[in-house]
Length: 248
Length: 44
Image 1 (cartoon, one colour):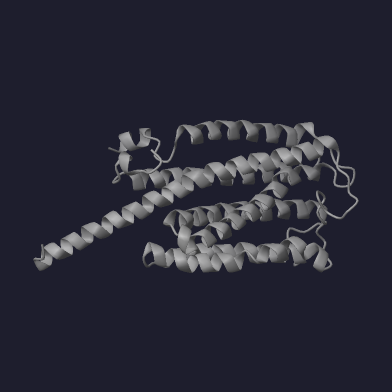
Image 2 (tube, chains in turn red, purple):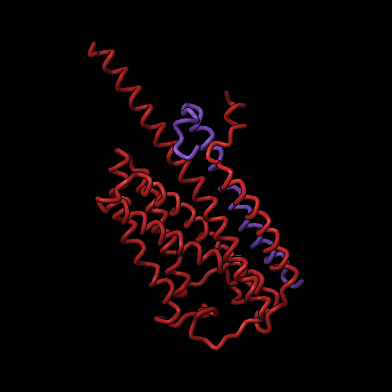
């Protein structure tokens, strides 16, 4: 049985398999360009190479949390209420936490080289850490128990509140005096980027987006299987209880 | 390359954590699928 299940790609479809191959090719491309092909920055030197993982990680984390909020809204709206939206919200939040964690760690490594410290209580860093902890809390709330719909309702409300932190994080560098640089792309600064560096940054965003979609599809399907398993277990327990009580 | 250790570490942390997350998701879904027939999966 185990062998059969292992061979059977449980949450995979031809689309996800194709997407997976394209994503792996993109990762290889990004690593080669990020580490070897792009030039060093005039100000940052070689440390700019960390940006090709750090910036897409942060942007995709934002996207993942926005998808969580939108899916939660879809669940709360009566016309579109479905547990599928709740599972997409949960899956997207998990991936968002992963990407935000990556962004924090890579940012910390960059900070050590540039600022001379792994961490400082700067506005951008502090608000990002707060956002990260908020979504860990969101994931904890999802696991509090109760029926699937109880889980979906309480986590949807929390997701709609948590997403309000994203503008605070994004604009923290403008609201407060911050060590962190302002947005280099689509920002108000006069910073210009070399064409190849800009291309590699956007390649990073595309590769991270592909990874996000691949992981979202698989994780959402895995959550569906886990919910189905819960329902099956509950049905069996009810049947056993009825049998014990002699109820047909 | 100057500061190669930190730069390579950032790439290793990034792709290793994504790899571990993907592996755990696939393993958990295989484990959950043991008691669910393939025809009951909405995407198959």
